[in-house]
Every structure is written in C-alpha cells, then in structure tokens.
Length: 205
Image (cartoon, rainbow, N blue to C red; front, side, top):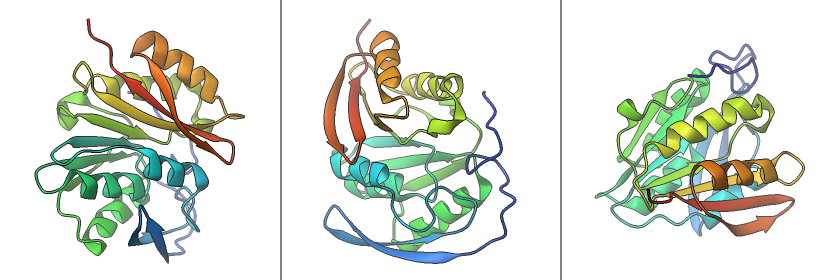
C-alpha cells in the first residue's frame, strides 16, 4: 500500500495535543466531535467535508467505506443514514484521528461503525461495501490518491457508488478523469465554495 508523508495524513502526528469539542448541525441533526491538533480541520467542519456530507446518498441497510475518515464526521453520518441493518467502515492513517473517530462514534451513539487505522485500503480487511465516500488528502500526491481509489473501488460491486469531493484548484478535474477511465462514469452531484462532489458508478464488465 502507498505510504503517506508527514502531515495530518501522517501515521503519528508530532503536534502537541490540543483537544477541543465541536458542536455542529449536519443534515439537520446535531452532532458533537472531539478533535485535536495534528488532524485535518480540527477547528471546524471544512466546506468540502460539509458539502460531501450534505450531498452523499446512503440508503438504509447499505454498507459504506469512508477513506481518509479523519475524526469521523463523514463516516459517522453515513453510518447513521445506513441504520442498524447497515453500517460504515472508517479507514484513517493518522492514529490520533482514528482514536478520535472511535471516541466520536461513542459520543454520538453510533454503534454500527468500525474504525481501521491503516495507511491504505485493504479490500480483504474492509470486505464488500455498497458505497465509498472520500475527501482525499489533496496534498498527498496523485499517485497515492489514485492508489486509494483503486483499492476502494475493489470493495464495490458493479453499480456500486463512490462519492468524492475535491477543489477546482486542487486537482478535482484530474480525479474525475482518472475515475472515468478506471472505475466508471462520473456525474457532478453538488458544488460550492470551489468544491465539487462527484458521483462515480462502478461500471459493469
């Protein structure tokens, strides 16, 4: 699996801990999240993540994979949408963020979420899913991001869905081209503040 450079996507962030608790409204519901220094967007839900949360479609009973889950907002909202018959697997390389995601699942009474701390997606460990959601680490480099997408797509059946967010100035067009070539057709789901949410449906054959 590709390794991640030292940043918020580092396995062991060196920044001293500065915990804080966020209180936010997502999809019309109140959520609480513990965050910390050394994780992505510790002071607020960033606009791209919020747009992805508000735009993704998860049906009751579906199983969701959140790639690069951070402290958990996207994956935990997806788990709640999936309901008790479904669930979510949150994969995160940063140990501090992964620990926060576990804590935030408990804080928000989400019992159907599993957190895996790993530097990539292992389809054998994740298992089959219906939906992939991802706010990729745009500064990690295209080779790493495309490797994550390839592994995540391997967890999907034909017709499975990937919801991805990216910024127009941070390579979202190249992400779209790669997805169309390697996974399936792509539609624009939403846009705002320079971000775009893409829906890619895994092609048959």
